[in-house]
Length: 203
Image (cartoon, rainbow, N blue to C red; front, side, top):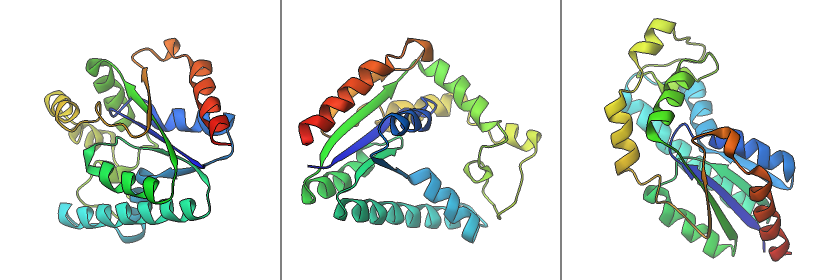
């Protein structure tokens, strides 16, 4: 039985960073990122307003599931990170049941005050895709530091999203929860051991 690992949790928890560490340790996994698909479509088509951006986001979601299904048809081991919620659960659940996949959810949690500071810092970094912060975008557009600061999420809105969107409740299959309030406290070897055990159980 092949395996899908979903890395979920609040924004700012380091999901992409962790997924890269897991893939380095277990290169059998193919990476699949919804955010990367959004950024690719923003670059290809651009958007002039939030309505057009939402159309591209929906296209990216469809692209994401199409690619996932292609991986499943090939019996690939798949690793995907996103702030998953109930919005994605039914479709994911259908696919893993249809293709008989074993699922492990790694749910990252942390103190929301710490996460807000991390999120704010990330949005100010040069490698942060401008499309995440803009309502109008064309490939090559660059955000000035001032414009980045004007588009930062307010603390109250950040906390509201975290508390109402269910990032901290999503799970599919076997759940392994990790508190990443302090990255220095993360037991990566313990996590890798659980992943290794899941892989061996599927062989």
